[in-house]
Image (tube, rainbow, N blue to C red):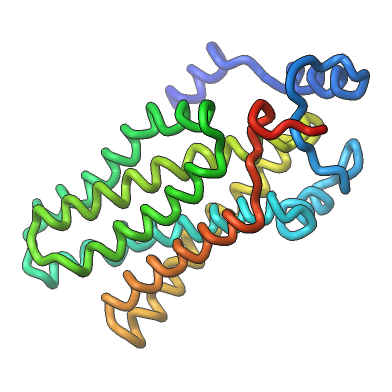
Length: 245
């Protein structure tokens, strides 16, 4: 389609630049702060080696990957459970559209500056704060009973998502060597997008046992715990703020 044509005409392949960056690192010619790349991986790793590194062998990458998976529980909640919950509370379809839309608009629009924010203060804090704020927004949904309140809780949830979403990917890119950066991002995205399916299944099971409200509490607690894992097992990945020694 149109996207494919525009890609062929205007998007340049970045692989040669990654190869050039990798050669500079190997020759010791890179200047400026050095990233804290994992050391327990070969120079040209295969998919399985990168998968194990991202999933458990490097605690920083594992913390990022699990956060990516868990944050998709929120999306599963918003797109599947949220409309049902609001409809049961008497909202019209138009009002439900506004509430869900506010989540998406705040999430998307806020990324104009939440990504830039992490270039100044680092990735770790926005990720953790975003996970917790997102969980808070989900919990707040249950504490009100009018459209204005639900618009507010959706905005809080969306802003939390805007804090964490671009910076999880940035954190992976920070400490993934150019020789295998594409593989690392692919594995991270594997775990992240798997969260849609796992989140939907778990939310369905929780809601079936404890009711729809239980699904909200489950998601809020999962986000709180996931953020804590990033706080304790992750680290700042921005090379300027936490360079390799």
